[in-house]
Image (cartoon, rainbow, N blue to C red; front, side, top):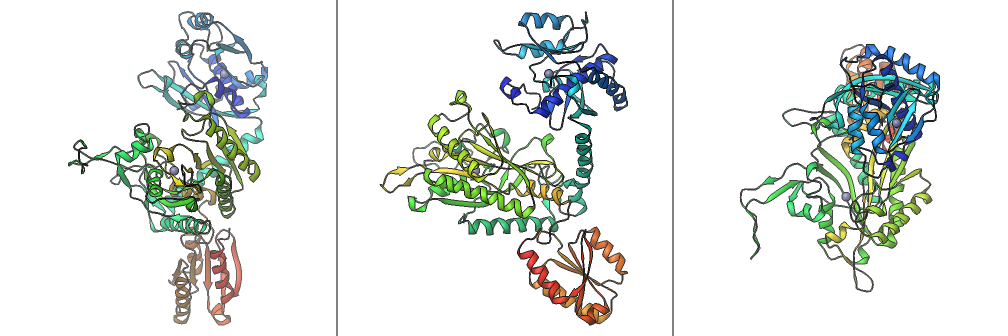
Length: 618
Ligand SMILES: [Zn+2]
Ligand SMILES: [Zn+2]
């Protein structure tokens, strides 16, 4: 996707750091040409956390060459050359490319800038063609850049990969040199420290070590299997969602995992979304045909990729009146999406996922308060999970794209966007507005969150949908007995179990708060005398009966080893019971990551555990 050509409009939206990183790509090319003047460059965009430049030359660049290239980059930055823009006619750009001047330090006769020629041909007729020059390096580029090379405060080359020109495997394979750049050294050091920490917290690594989930080739790629400890996380999250939604007046529903083709034709997922769905299951026999209807042999079923069409059917299943609205239908629905195998990534990109889904059917008048309540639910969850950095990304339509990229109902777009904007402003939650990125049938709001070490993550998407209810013929009887179409809000504050748990594992580094911890309490006896074991077993049973996930280690291992084992397993609370504790009616409490809290009366300890779980304390 990163190979896709950006529109001029998207380029102008480049953030400051993206400009800086893209500028660093020009500096990288300049440096490489100082060492290998024959190198041919293709594209050098900013990417998440950095930049790259694709190039072709006979030598393979390896990380051993980085020092040498970085030295040349430093010189170019020190020279503090301005990025000078020149607008040229297409013929002039083509002439410069033919003599090897584009993506070069000088004319290179006999070595035409072949990839730049290809890029040039992709620029639509009538679009401005611009060149940028820093020092001797001249490049075909639409910008934008920083003012001068000296604005690049800190940079580092990170790795080499290969990539096809324009991402097409029929094209030549190029070398892709990745790097990153920052305003200053401090920011860069913080970034690399964060990466180090992120490696330790990688949910795939912790998921394996903590026995939370696994994948199996026989089951299939992207289809996670949840071990008992991971299942605990799922069930605790569901409990939280169900409680929260119950108090927010949602109704729960259940729907099957597959449906006939026709459902997705009605919803519009087919044919447009077909690539992201598993291929259909074709039944041998044709389905029951109504009289006179010709149904081709082979009824087709699809695994569901979205819960919405099913919920719409439930809305339509009974006559609805304005008194039923707002109607909030919730389900932790399982969806299946055919993600490309190269895109699969731990729990973050999977092919089977359970979504904290709900669809709110409401009138226009109810929209603002409903949407506000959804936002409040997000904030409530953020507080529980200690997510203190978040942003709402509000994507709107572009009037020029009505009837193409966006459903052609200008007035409804303008009205709903205003409603959403008003709620966002009133809620005081941080948000940015992104034009031309709404969903087909209404504006959408992506929620971005950052974990404790500053890693960004897209949690969920809310959508306001004013088109699909009509496609499904959903109506309610209004006060005046007229039939009206409801609005629909799609929302999923906890995203999918898979992504959200992936996030939580990294956010907490596997050290879950007590209410969420797979093993909440472990009782460790100091020795294995019969009265000790008996008392420990009573305590275990009492906690277990109260719903606490508790284990007893009554083995003959020395206490040090028992503690080490429990710490290793990231057990939240360790209760040490020795002869002296027993006599005094105490328990010695140890909390994972916090250490020993000393001896406390048994009943006090137990009450504290119950309260912490019930209140879902951090
Ligand atoms: Zn550029
Ligand atoms: Zn939906």
